[in-house]
Length: 161
Image (cartoon, rainbow, N blue to C red; front, top):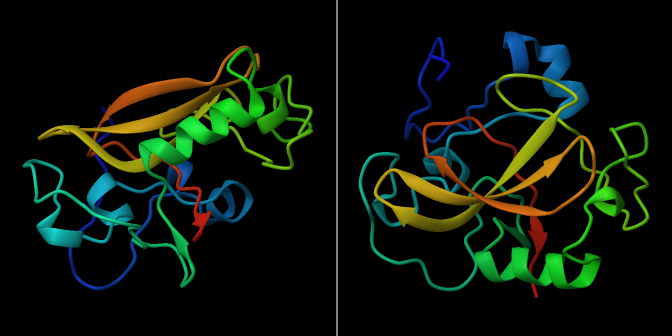
């Protein structure tokens, strides 16, 4: 696991990591967030203990009118785009991406650019683990993943419904 230079904290400032600490990578691929930062510490959320259950949409770092995806949002995406392939979700030029869905996912994580990406949900699995949606370079499958909350992942906001 990468040790970040500065841990994200509940200080009312949205903090992000950039691949290789390069602002140009954040501009091109977006920021990477620890889970508690992504949900903006709602209901006392943190990266090392459980918190009270969330109800309804969790805005987190998303703009007004948008929210951090739930497990249900990810299930809907998988049903809509099909569980057999994530090519439709990847931007053209991102591995096998066709972007036929318009989702335009870019492949970045805390280890590399161009291989895979994971998007946080607000759904916790254990005290230190939360659900993510992972897309891969080869575009072969939409994968639900369980990620350590301190890991830096992408966020894809969902329009409120």
